Length: 159
Ligand code: CMP
Image (cartoon, rainbow, N blue to C red; front, side, top):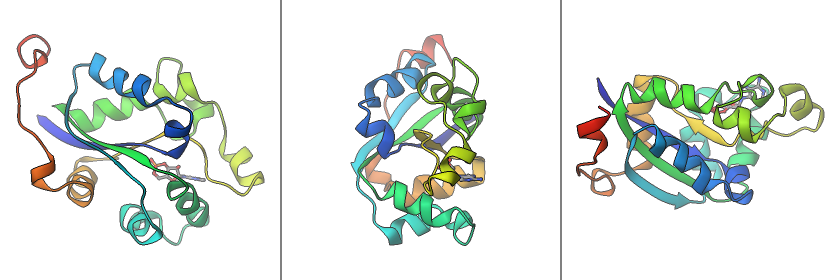
């Protein structure tokens, strides 16, 4: 039940100075940060991270966006962390994300708007889509030495 998942604060979140407020959402829910770094990825790394999207009609816009500035990468740990993080983040298109989710509270744009402007949708976060993706993405972004084992109060009061 205890899982690890990868979360990125994308270049729009970093440049809008939302990093602290976004991390706060995850900490408030009791998720544990076991790894964190700032990284400016290149096109080769983007193709590895978005391997499942390479070839899709929006891929080049997505790559341009993710390499446009540094991102904050985190490994979060918790009970059913993959599903819980996706719930906190909201659906991929901010226009449809519920208030109370990160995308619903801090963004509102749509696929149509992004397509019209020939850019990727600015949706602040990437979060692993399922358990298999989470395992692969955590391994791509972090070495074992970059992740840490420690106790939080949440393991006593929240888990
Ligand atoms: P992310 O969670 O980073 O993973 C895949 C990304 O592809 C997703 O966020 C969106 O930014 C992007 N994406 C998915 N579907 C579409 C789409 N139909 N049009 C444009 N971008 C998309």
